[in-house]
Image 1 (cartoon, rainbow, N blue to C red):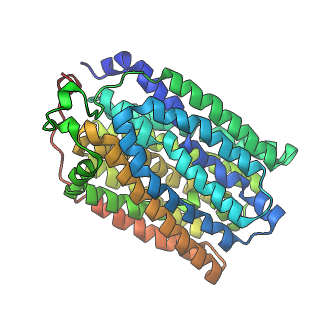
Image 2 (cartoon, rainbow, N blue to C red):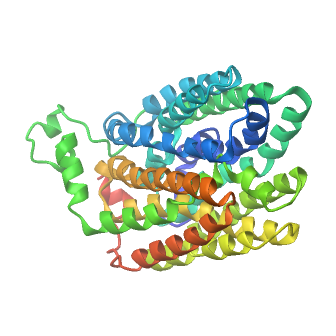
Image 3 (cartoon, rainbow, N blue to C red):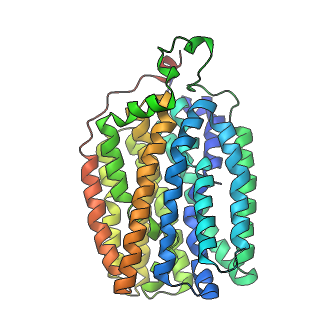
Length: 415
């Protein structure tokens, strides 16, 4: 099948994955920080205390492997349906909070755990099983939709929050997630290929690859050196994640720019994310994936250095956020692409879940470092310098990956 022919044949699963990602957990990464200034003003939390929200990512580490294995066994449709119904309820809960920081932590942990049902761990399986030659570009489409939404939605939410209050803003988000999630579930094919079923006639022998139970599937994954290199690199590159979520608006305001300029910088971040996804997706289909990963993920190192020394310069802050956004876009495609290259389709979501656990551990560890840094230095600058070095170290790990052998054709894989 030709490069573009894969898009013609698989338009429906591509649309389902793109809409699902565009109305799921990835969009929350662009919108959560918009509410931070309003919550701090109304409830009086300190910035160092608020940065502890990143610790809630540990809750996702507990559920992601289960979600990945369920997706490999049951398929995308039933797993995504649960996420589409539960995630809006979490944002309704956000709108009802009473000022208890522990309630905020509980809701945030629930958003991450439930939102993982709408994450790339689930939806990118549709791409891994249906695309081969154009897999990188298809991943760009899937992860590019959240970036497009993220370029517009923060500005809308700022206007809603300023006019009607942040509680209404959270409810607008809840409605968006519900409608988009249900549309994605309806588009998802009922019968997916490459599922790791057990108990049917073909798997009774317990000798076929598809009859792996959960323990043996994870054992297969962790025995591969590629898993540790990918996970280690992603973990280091994920240390600054808390800056991209709840702390982004606060970090930008800390540079000395005003709130409208900060909102524009967040839009530049989303635009950079879209550019990163496009460039990375096309490059992954044409060049060695380890080189593409290292090059794409190295850009935020420069961005963090620039933003640390911006001191109120709107152009410098905007350029910095654009560079950071490019890597944020690339890191959505790279784990999915590398996992699809180095692991079998029967364990794709399981391997993705473990890789995302590394991302979450990195994010939570970064949140601890950020909280301590803010408490001691009262500024984001020292943390930004530290993150620049950590990201460069992660890029070096990507270069340790061996070039994978060309994957089998999709038609042969499912023959």
